[in-house]
Picture 1 (cartoon, helix red, strand yellow):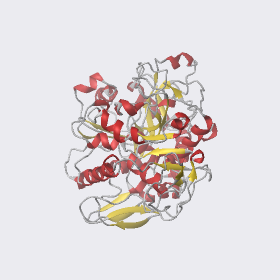
Picture 2: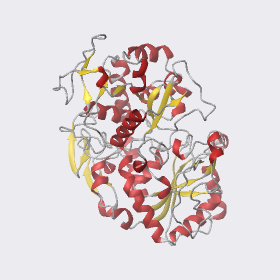
Picture 3: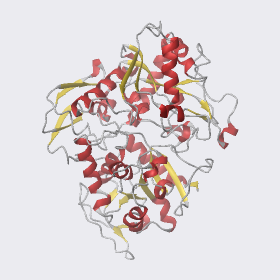
Length: 530
């Protein structure tokens, strides 16, 4: 992880905005974790623990009475061994795919959280788990009925990525292995307790193994499935299931919660930016004509044909840069050297922090890491909007939400309770914003006043890529509207970063709001019926 394992060189790197930056020197034998703009060094890069928090506390909105239990009877080959092996693979650059790291930090945050219970008073199963970690001194047994949540510490996404000979739906991992070494070990996964179990499946939902895709309550990168989608392949284990969407993990130290929280809110909209927009793209290939990435190709063609004489957008230059091949992840870089890869990712994030707008066009699935990266950098996401063709679309009202591409001079805040538009596709896989992004407004995943109104800052483009340039030109002429969006973005950016190292459990962040969402789900009793 770049948060743990910096480039194998002594070069100086810079993070953050120009007037809010900080620097540190990397070395070949140490890991660096940033907290409160101080440098913490840890030895052994291949096995360093993301978390080193000594006195965790509960952020707001997490009840002190809330208690959860982590299963410790799963074989190490399905838990710690997977985490250790994939950390080593990341550190050695054996794996360059950057999108499946969230389970590593989420599991470590669960293990160090003050709400964790180490013993369950249950004579039927005589469960006496091993004690370890910062909270091991709390040896009081808790009655089974007082446990609010059971966490299954199987890092499914990392396991799928680590296993050789990748196949869709993680079918390269044997069914019997997951069944016998994970599911059969869950002593309390029965009856009413099933809905109190949480699985850590932080990958795009369609990449998860069928045994785990629609089982119990699980964390996913999205989209969340429900009965309105007719192409859900259910498994025999399915009864009630609920998907809770979480953001991708950005492991660059410059975007840890301490940095985001210490940045004055005014800086989100007063910081000068060099570029009108920045868009990084990979090589085009034949796959684009068969999936949702085709819109990226359309955009490049639009630029090549109609932007030839365009040097500025709203008086500022723009960045349109090829960064790598499109045969893998968006973060695959042409260079095979670890230090060069990491440096280039940092440069990409710095460019985002210097840009007003950042297009995040459809990828292989509705959510994508780029969307959250640009928000952390203070760059306003630009998306294409489609009317979905799902059953939910029958409820779409005529206004359908704010249409920025048709209101070039009118950027008033819109609100549509029954907005079932998608930022991904117009076909039957056109999952709505509510079903694609974490804690979205009207998703019923948090109390209404806590949900995120993405429409308040995201620029929505209707009518295809041809409307991107005129929309951005109009917005660049309306600085009041740009400042409003930047301010709204700054209010929610903290929810898209996970606190690691000394940042753990000290701030409102992605983990704290995820836990709040889990508690809200448990209390509301709302599940999606399979």
